[in-house]
Image (cartoon, rainbow, N blue to C red; front, side, top):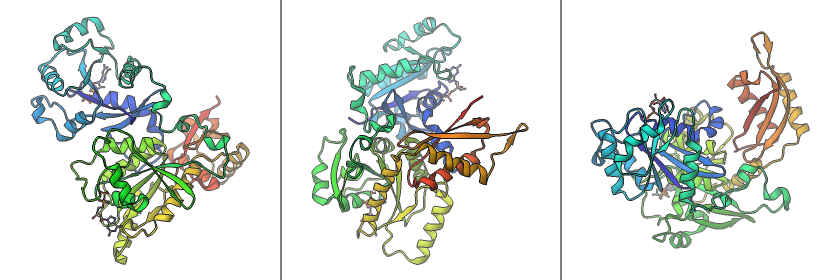
Length: 455
Ligand code: GDP
Ligand code: GDP
């Protein structure tokens, strides 16, 4: 089963973006280390325990004088159609408004499970406030205070339990059980024969995803997997290359005939997020003949947030004039320079040029993300880094970085202990991460740096 999709709906100011941030923010840490990257404020991934779910903030819904379904923004409608459950937010302090009533009517028509969520219950009597919302004819409201997080875990647990049939084995929803625990199959089995690597291919419409999928698994198999009715199931297509097993997961290109084009209109961020969650390594495809867009940066941001390995494929390299090649190289530098850990691979999906090397890179990234980093080596790198470049002095005292150990794998997590580590500037954190990356050859995977203070 794919990660369920939960849409946040409600009038402006009821607290949708506050709740969205609370649900998705545990994944901020990695993104914060990439100054060029802004968060996608509409789409994100949250978790209840190990259960991932996709959250969509339909922000555009229900402007004060524009509350009807017919005026809903297209993306917002799309989000409702894609959603498995809808959280309908209302404001406990304001009580029922005409806008809430209109939205209730519109939501009812969609036939989806709607959870009435009464936000801002901090400082009000929840029972009294709830009475006001009975008139909407929905189930009793779930009281929360999104700013403080009150009631949020209880609500999300109930929603997820409902979506997964109540008694889920949490593992059943986990695409990659190692991702969280830091334990990998390889740590207990033979290192020389890694199991199949799960790969997702993402990118904007028309960059060449289907062409690449065809190149990897062959046209006939693409047709086989393009069956109506399979769209809600996670699709997994195994293939092999140079003795290494790969599995394509949830890839848009697998789902449709290559001649049916995915229109810009139909491009689904939700599907992309599900694919990223289901994968271990993500191939992000860019079109060498187009400019790198904000959307591209957002997609890359989602990969980094997820902690998955990333391989950048710059496609349609065939027949490009030298000045055009120079242009895209420069653009990669300027717009994606922050992505220094993922070297771009220039390919032609159409002719197959560079595709083999792309898969080698995928395998390399997969192994890097799971590498064991011996404590002694980590401490040597830390010591050398500090010697070469001392951390700054804050409030009259130099920040001290004392020792390091590995906190987890996939993505590699390095815990550094010291004094005043909370004051360590972003530039120094990035410097440290780069030293570790170079020392251990951790190309293609985000690195999580956790700073602890001993005082
Ligand atoms: P949106 O327009 O629905 O996305 O609403 P926002 O998330 O931007 O929130 C609107 C305002 O309500 C902001 O000033 C928030 O700080 C405030 N707010 C959100 N959640 C709560 C809450 O639980 N309690 C209180 N007191 N204020 C909240
Ligand atoms: P998708 O929407 O990302 O799946 O993109 P498609 O695979 O459908 O490709 C979009 C268009 O780009 C099609 O006309 C392809 O033939 C073309 N295309 C894909 N890869 C290449 C390539 O490597 N070189 C060139 N010149 N065209 C390509």
